[in-house]
Amino acid sequence: MKRIFSGIKPTGHLTLGNYLGALRRWVEVDQHQADALFSVVDLHALTVEHDPARVRRLSRQAATMMLAAGLDPDLCTVFVQSHVDEHARLSYILECTATDGELRRMIQYKEKSARARAAGQSVRLSLLTYPALMAADILAYQTDEVPVGDDQTQHVELTRDLAVRFNQRYGHTFNVPRATPPPVAARVMDLQDPTSKMGKSHDSGAGIVYLLDEADVVRKKIMRAVTDSGRDVEFDPENRPGVANLLEILSACSGGSPEELAGAYESYGALKKDTAEAVLEVLRPIRERHADLAADPGHVDEVLRKGAERARGMARPTVDAAYRAIGLLPAG
Ligand code: AQP
Image (cartoon, rainbow, N blue to C red):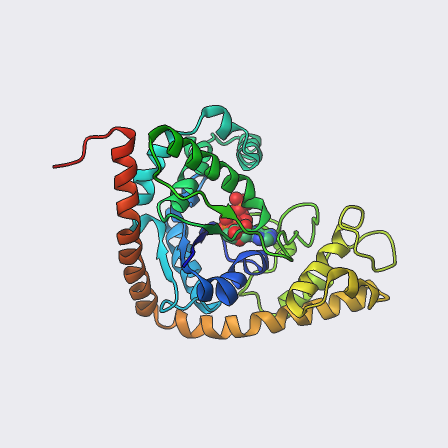
């Protein structure tokens, strides 16, 4: 059975982008077809300015949302990254496999370090080494597939390079994984700035649909989405990114290709109205399950405890093998 690993950073409240770009496929496909591990990757939330209490709160909330979205702990492993020491252990080994130049070329590093500097903040070293930790997350489990939105494919490419390099230099240790972006909504864009990704840590609240937004808030955000100067509803992501984004979201929520859907609308208003209702239809059951789960935090903790135990057992042999292969003396 193939092995799948993916994760969510507790850097903000989960968004429609997280759901359509990642979570939904984990729930509907991956957990049924593979030995799948899904993690709240909390160590990654420490690479930029953070508030400790908020990260803790968001970590539990992300885990709760993952279960509310439909991950079933009887079908897959749900856990928190920092509960499994093997991630950090392997990350160091992969830092010793990667080069400084390779890490500096990562688009996310360039963008986030520029943003931090512009805000007068220092850039944490972990922001640079982040892809080595992400590679460790993936390689520790002998992962075959990494279902991610296309904002993460560059990091998965680097993971592949590191796996191949390590295997060639020190002997076969890691499976070489591949990224599997979703067919639609691989990148849901911000409703107020459709040239940038809808990201949960971004501060354009009005452009981001959060999974726990109230129905009237969702309607308002979608009805106020920035569209383009033309009047016809056409699917043209390059020249009409605002309308294309709405068509992608509608397509992901209700079926039909964005191109076909474009032909069915004569006004932006009607497109927005149907998109809002389609989104609400998708979010309703998640919100209901979330309310039940939030009332029983002990259950979520127990799922995470068992998940970490299982993940640890799976990761340890590979990480121990990597330590031996690279030349470290085994502990007695
Ligand atoms: N807008 C999106 N469209 C499609 N997929 C998305 N994903 C995130 N945003 C979109 C996918 O969701 C999974 C978890 O994402 P994450 O926690 O790594 O990223 P985020 O929500 O984008 O959080 P941040 O902190 O706002 O991220 P960055 O680092 O970009 O600033 C991933 O599979 C991701 O592809």
